[in-house]
Length: 495
Image (tube, rainbow, N blue to C red; front, side):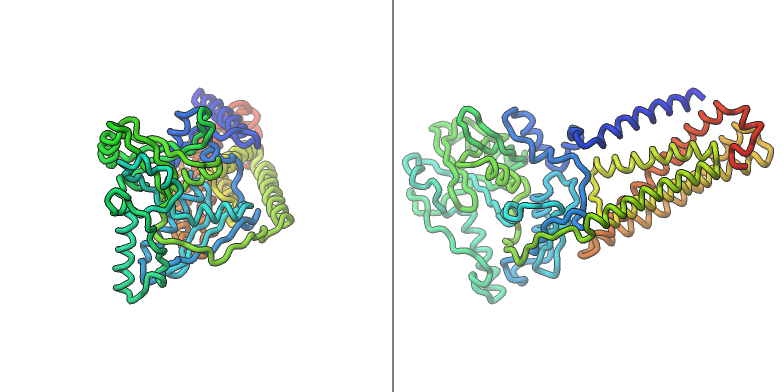
């Protein structure tokens, strides 16, 4: 019995922790900050003055577009369909996803439509202008060689300059246009800047593009009273960047930071920079954070324009949501009452385990987090029913063992052991179906199916823990306390 008491203590501690994490004012746990952008977060945490709010976000239940409304945007490729492939469109959609969901944990809808459109749905978004600006900007960052141009920096600051990288991209689009029989205007290609290097009349040389960045984070410099962006360089680019900055630092030559052709700043290189540095410019807090996000997510493979955008209200309405939640609560209460009335002592253990099951489900929905849409809530409610099914299998098996003449504690052991295989197989088969539904939900227009599949599968996995281990712990302890009365009154077990 000692192991049952050990499990009881662990379950109680787990429940206390789960309830604390679900409270509205609980800060976001540190382990949730370790996501798709761990490198940028590491830079942020190493710098006390940096603003890390863009990573931490709000630790609340995420509600879907049908519950809270939000922003729906249809993006159109600015290039004709002949100028890019479907893989290019998918790559662009992935970049858009990283921009609006940098942590990779919030469920937003980003899906391709046809061969030249991307549909974006942002639940709860209330500022369309900021969202659209973040999504659309291409953010081509270049570190440009300004050696010998110390006296020209003031004239070039804020100007659009021509670099060899821009020229190569332009020539590539030009060749593609010729192959497709299109003009550059029809391809949506903007004219090149005309400002070249005054020393040789050639395009400025790009040392490294934003592709070489491993991380970027906005940071406030209290000494200079300005916002800047601290960045780290990928290992494969460190030798290139380090060698150039080592040469430039000898005579402290300037190196230009160029974004989409515009010179942001051209600081003098003071030392060799192998692993990273800072980007300075006339940044506000918002512009610095937006640029850092764009640099982390990379440039868009295809330039996009907004075909249409609309702020949508909750399709269900607050009354419908409240009715759905009320129905779920009433259903759970009815199940708890049924289990207690029909199975008595066993029902008490089942009810306690069901409360643990519901709490853990809500905890993981908040921790992951999963977006709560009406189909997702439906999946959660169905999983509650499957949790009860597991307990019923166990209890009926225990009753059969007692009727066959086994002693009470022996019947409990055999009942749990023999019912486990049935519970495992039934839940596993349903989880497989959930996997198929989730894959189907990745196709355009079927994203709500994925939410249903994920919450149902989560409930089934948790059920494998609660229906066997948690119920076993509660039932063995209760039966041990009431062993003599139960031996004399079998009706206490529903027999």
